[in-house]
Length: 288
Length: 290
Image (cartoon, rainbow over all chains, first blue to last red):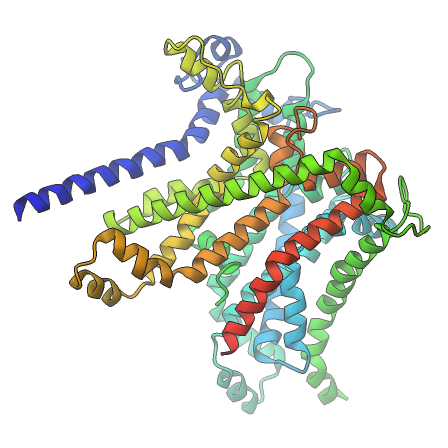
């Protein structure tokens, strides 16, 4: 009996070691990005990719933020960081608000054809965006929004609504319809019920929706590269340009600092609200 | 009048979404489909030429490279991510009660964009200064690791980076599935003397079938749409050795003034996604009703 427990303990120790080894492997790229970003160019050329930096040299960070070249101009990532913010914040607020109202109707105020609309919308979560890229470019040009931040906000709202509606609809479907009926008997209207009954219950799903949209839009590259022009590019496009700009020698430390800057907002969101992040990810797959 | 309006309110609220969905999803798909039957190059033009663009597409060796790459990438990406995700989930589930920190570590790559992922791995896999140099510094001076610049191997670097980015997500899906498995099922199996392995294989995994399918659908969806990762890691290169349909479409529609051909390739991508999604959605929605 005791030998059994011993072998069990050994197994357990082995498995935990395995888990820790994997944890190190997953952390590896972040470690390499951070250490490389603090090294000097000579240190990178002569040293080892896994070595710690000799000293904390922040000059690559300053350059990545304010003076690195991203294709045509050399203002660093800062302007594009703010471009991304100016795209992300309105787009996520609008798409979450619209998604909440849509979900409220689709779950509590169903009418003939509303389920069909939901199905049609759901399919939109899955279409490869390549199939709408060309006509959308036409539409933006026609609206005079080609190469503008407003245009990108519009695109992200349009193609984000399918997801936000899905989140809210699946969340509100779990709230009994009797609540709405009772409130209506008391004389409350459509918006009053939404505001006083549903909104107070919605905090978790609002967080899921906001985090999902923030991550999706911040990390978007396809819409950014197709629909932005010089000066309105989001940070993902600027990072890609920065890394592929071949003026002078390659500065891997600046590349890595820039990559960390581009990843930082979504990483912070993930670390602060990871629980909701996971819920958003799985909500798309396992529909409640 | 006011009553009527109040009654119509739910429909009014949904109207903008319905219109936008109709125009910007289905209308645009129709527009792209129509475009794929025309000669359009720089600008859309409406001389219909039948299946000509599709014939050109499938006669194009670059498109075949993209399709082959997609197959290799999708299969490897899904198999490895599923294997790693399931393994980590099972190990976490059985061995560690308080797994918050480890779970956070496995999942954080999912918060990082494919552009950042590609940038990081491009540096790690750098033939001169990355892993190759590290191993050489250890004394193996003949060690070679230059997949990034090897036309036959470049596609596998995309697999590596994509697995790193997405396998934690599979782990999270499986873990929430495992935590939902009824404990009495496991106890019953163990009472019958089933080994841990057999318990998982015959009792727990079958219960997790929906999670499994969900993960496969999401991963194949990520694979077909893969664009950013290729752009940032290999740029589709060397040459066009690591092209995928998504990068093929972008290159032809936007930089090579081959709009009709690009539209045709986009329609083929849509057909591929639909072949996976429609049966999945159908079974999901039907399963809900019964």
